[in-house]
Length: 249
Image 1: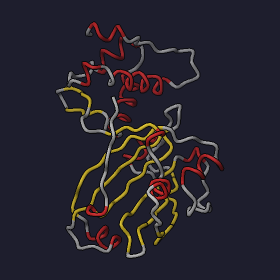
Image 2: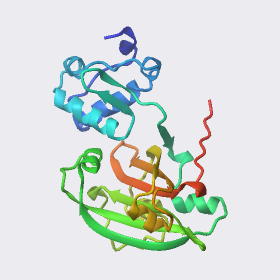
Image 3: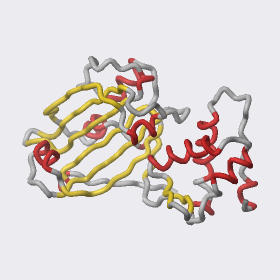
């Protein structure tokens, strides 16, 4: 264990009502902010961390899995775990729902499709939400754009804890519904952005040619206690979407 770690208290409160894996996850989120890990050093081995914290390796694994799914950590078999580069984590004062983003820019958009369905949570989403695989969760599908046609296709999956019924008026801003009607505050979003060629299905939805470039933007949304709320994936027509990030020091 390096000296730096001891400048950050690595302690688990076994009497806390907070589940152990949440506590470990919060510790790890703080750890990956430390300069040494940001500079590319490997994190301590799971087995060492488990010993030091006096908890099972499984609990550490649960926390590492979640951070890996959020794209914050990269794990290489037999090599180690390190902090991922080029991840955008934005605090709420900096990020908005699509509706807010558009109205802030003074743009009027069109909803071409709004649909809800109940689906079984696939492994990636189940892992982020910390629910059993196959749990029934609500999926909201929205196809949005301007009068001349769609430019983004969204799928949102919600933690069952929120209590959404699927009958809500989803033409309202999503986070207004979650906050005002269900009293859950989305406060942290971890995002991943990548480019890919449009598959047949995506091309059909966005009315573009197969193989044309699309931007895929994944968003992992949590509440102030770091509990998962929503997994959202959006497919944007690349030429109609520019992602800009302002970083202040």
